Structure formats: C-alpha cells, structure tokens
Length: 292
Length: 292
Image (cartoon, rainbow over all chains, first blue to last red; front, side, top):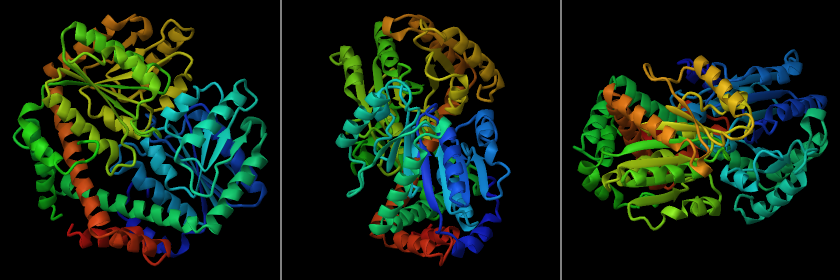
C-alpha cells in the first residue's frame, strides 16, 4: 500500500501510530560495488543469531527494472527468504510523487509497528536521496571498498558527512590499509561527526563473515551512545518532521497537478518559458491558486 | 545570489525573464571516476573552437568541502579560467532548503540570460538528484568507463533511463568493447529512450581529445532532433514546471519552518513520535496552519 500510495494508507497509518517507535533503524549506504547487499545479508544473519526480528528495506531510487532488486541481490538474500522473523522488501520509487522521501519513512513505520527490532535500510548510490535516507536512520553505516576509487572520489561522493560507522569491506584486498588511512584523515577534516561520537572504522570481508562481530559491536555502541545523549529522540523527531513534510508537500503537489487537471502549473510554466513572467511570480500565483 | 538564496533574487529573476530560453542545456552525469570533469573541460574547448559562449555548472550535491569543487577539478578547468567567454561555477547546495532542485534551474536561468549559447551541467554521483538535474537538461550525456563496475552495476546506478547520448570514456582501456556490448543490450531492454530517438554510444578518450568530434556531432544531432520533434519546448516546459514547483515548495517550507519559529512542525513531530497522532493527520494540520 505504501508503494502504491493507496488511498487507504491514511487509515492504516492512523491505526499503526501507537505501535511504532521501537525499532533500531540502521541505514547502510555506499557506492555501487562495495558489497552492500552482501553486508546486509550478513548483518541479518547476525541479528537473527541474537534472536531479533529483522526488517530490510532495499531502496533503489532509480532502478530501470520494476521491483527494484536485481537478480544478484535476490540470490544473496535468499538464505533469509523462508525465515518468518525476517521481512525483506525492495522498493523502486523513482518517479513517484515525492519519491523516496515520501515512501521510505512510511515503509519504516510499517516494519517498526509490525514488531521488527531492527530495520536495515540499504540504499544504492551516492546522491542526495541517499543523504535523505541516511537522515531517517538512527545509525548510518557507510561502506567503502579498496579499489573502488580513491579517497578523493569518496569525498566527492559526499558520504563523509553522514556516517556514524564506516565499514571498509573487502578488507582483504590490496589498498585496504591506504583507504583506511585516507578515510581517517578525511574524517578528521570533515564536519560530519556528532559531538561526542567519533565514527569508528571497521574492517570486514562480508562474503566470508569476517569482521561482522566488530561491526555489530560498533552498531551497538552507537545505539547506546544515542540513548545516553538524548540523540535517539532528536533523530526520531527529525524523521517525523521529514515524514510529515513529505506527506504535506505531496498533498499540495497533487492538488496543483491533479485536481486542477494540470492547468495552473502548465499555464504558468508556459508563461515562464515565453519570458512573460519569472518563476517567483509564477510560484506566488500557484500558491494563491491552491489557497496556500 | 542564487547560492545564497538572496532575498533580492526575486527582483533579479523578474528582470532576467525576457532574456532566457536561448541556451542549449547539456547535462553530463556518471559515477565518480568516469572522467566527467575531463570530458566537460574538453567539451568547453570544443565549443570555444566553434566560437560559442559557454557556461559550466559543476553541481555537487554532497561535497563536504565548501565550494563544492575539489582541487583536481579546478586544475582540470584551469585552461579556461582566463577566457571571458567561459563562465565556470561549482555549486555545493546540499543542506539548502530545496537543495539542488531549487538552485540549479535558477543558476541555469542566469547563465542562459547572460548570453551563454551552451550551458554544461556536470553532476557527480548516481542518485535521485542526478536524475532531477538530468530532467533539467535539453540533452543528457551519461558517461561510463571500463573497469568502473560492470553493466549490472551501471543498471543499479539507474543511469540507463536518462541518457540521450551515452559516452564510453577511457575507451582505450581493456573492457571497453564489452562495456559497449552490455550497454547496448541493456539499453534495448530499457524504457528510457524517447520515441524516435535511439541514444547513440560514443567512445572517447577525453584526456587525449579522442572521439570528441563524434561526441559533438551526437550532441548536435540530438539538438536537431529536439527541434524537429517539438521536444525542446516539451523539455523546457518541464524545466519551468520543476522550477516553479521548487520555488513554491521552498516558500511553503520556509513558512512553516521559520515564520512559525519551528513551533507547528516540531510540535506535530513530537506528537507523531509519541504515537499520539499519525503523520497524515499531522500533515493536514500543518497545511491548515499555513493556510494551505
């Protein structure tokens, strides 16, 4: 229903409201090829070994294939497919009104209210939407791998502000030590760290299960830090603000796109293209037209 | 003024309105490391040889360093720095209200009204924001390079729907032929192509200037196709719609974030976190509070 933006969603969300707020939301991001799906799958195994109920949202903002997940990911997650305490969902929400920022927090809310102790949100790519998704997580893991581009490229990819824990996966490969050194010095330059929390750098070889206990410990440490410093509440307030805003904005866009049968916005766009008016004046008129 | 969201921007944009609409806007995107900056620089040289005035917007949604561009890019663009017919600007707009979708079309509008014949918009990364930026271009170039991850990874990066022209850069490297084959078969599966336009695949070695005439020809062909099929108007209407919407939404967000001193949204977020209300009801209340 979230993916289809079902009209009945409103009623469902009202019913779920009292049950949400228990899950630890862990975001997992990084460039293509660093091993996100393998790491997610390994983390699920780890959480299941600790008897946690686990939700996985694999968020792919731009997959050209319907369903979002490609065969490789499905194969990697197959070992969990029959476990009734694991719920896995791939979402491809590009093109939807409001897109990721609309659907992801609501999907999180559903998994949370369904009793998941942990929800892993795996995002593909390195763009703005990943930063938005990271903003929804309690704990954000940023994955890197040797040989996937140097430190400068990692900085360009903009992931050095958002990590609570950095993971160098494929750490048995050449270049892992250098990547770690570069990452450490770049993190020292950055402004991303929360005051009082120094993001640890964990080395893993997810495909062989190496380093995962260290990773689980780092995640647990961050969860404890969040609780001890009132940061869990801060992050959840932020998530709720984003969620409310996304729903409100989508509702407005629907009003001026659909209810008015495209007329207002299309006419205004035509006037801007013709140079008859400027976009600010057009925006004022649009808001006036929908009562904003 | 665009980058600072200056209050005087409204007046400036009103003054520029009659002068925009002439530039050919070329988007250039691809994963980190495929050679976007080198290709942009080479394209600038090519356009200058044809006596075109050129604007370059290097859009980096998430650079942790202020100013957006890293040293490497600056060095690569230095050869054009003293040319008065070339205007180069790096924008790092993450965190800004409305972000890229707000600032980029307005910066484009300024360069367009300033008489640039061509504006190149170079985006870093492979996420949602790049897709949004691509939606602003008349012609979108998608760069790939051998050895930067296989075809499946390219598909995951979601760039196979947005290209009008595909560029295999570093085409002298091993794997270029295979990448071309994979790309061709994936494009055949995809849904991205406009009816009547088959995206060409051009091979370049931008650092040595190889293949750039072919690339210029492919860009020119697409520009001609746009004009012949009324697609230029369609794309510019789309860009104007996005621009108006982004300004209108930003204006609304400012109202409920700033004018109300955070009260409405923060209170509602608190109620959602506490499970006292659901995000849909909260969104309704938020819109009612600002008269929407």
